[in-house]
Image 1 (cartoon, rainbow, N blue to C red):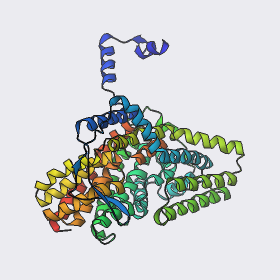
Image 2 (image 1 turned 90 degrees about the vertical axis):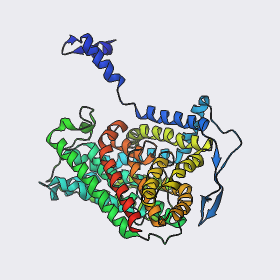
Image 3 (image 1 turned 90 degrees about the horizontal axis):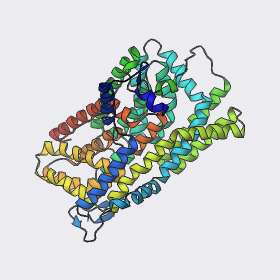
Image 4 (image 1 turned 45 degrees about the horizontal axis):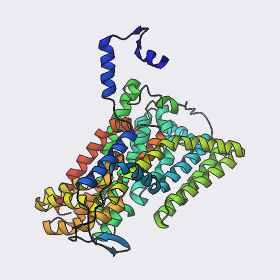
Length: 484
């Protein structure tokens, strides 16, 4: 009852009827919670299984991958529609399907709790970097984004970059920015590299293999794409950061307590101890193993979890934590990831519903049909738009390539669009939208590590990502025009 009364109090008096009506209106217009958005998308997917006919392409093995066979789409006679009453069952399946990444998120969160508590990474990123850029802090944003992009365009770094989030956010907050700037540096910077995909085996590598192009050919144009994405995004992020530094009330997360939770004072005169150096060495060596495993050994979430776990064990030993201290910090770190892990289960349920309803191929088929009547240059833009839409339901780059490229490649041949341009349209449509769509589990992991809500991230990022998307769309049209 107290809470209800306090909600109505305004400067020691009861709100007027007009003020109460205004408050109710604001509540009605309130942005829905992340879980509500995801459940709504699950419900939409269920409705689509009822409305759309179930259909499939034939599939075949090609270069070790199962891909669709163009021109073989056919409707399925059996009824695969999903009852709305079975929605909770499908959501449960989503949690099972997402168990691998959910387990990774919880284990990594626990390990990051220990690594962050030790503070070695924070010390070197904050103190060493801040000391070198004192008086010209804005340079940190494009500099760190470029570093993150390297991981993206080489070994396809996505969720692995979460390891850098706590240190970069703490640095940004100490410099007068907010957590959104810190997350954007790591996530949007890394995603720019992933999207450009110059040597990325998971998007360009798979797509070019299906398109029967030489591996990583046409890289000169992708280098230009990388530069464009980094320039566009770093300008947008820097402009926001400068506004927040000048007036903290203009921060999207002002008043939420998020910025305060990351606040720490920089001591630029502090000297690193042997523990800091050993802690940094443990992290660098461990992360080096992770890069090696991801790029050449086919490692995935299970192995990633093992690497982070052993980094945490070594870090705990270096800092002399007792077993109970280590366990306490581990649990504290896991707590930060729980909400994100739950969101992953709901996000995975969307793709599970589409698969169980046998309508993924149906959606791809009907989205690709309009491309057949578009002129060449417009076709390339249409390809990117279609890939962006498909990415909402199939946010995995390699899976999306396996589903769409066998259809898009012969279509591009027929319409006079080069296969290289078709791959370029795919990578842009798949990659850039990853920074906004709530079904992309890596983004959910970043949000959890940053202690941010999806609605605040969306409010901050949509213009920046939208500018990236439009720039890439223009480059896709140019690619078709020059015969790339």
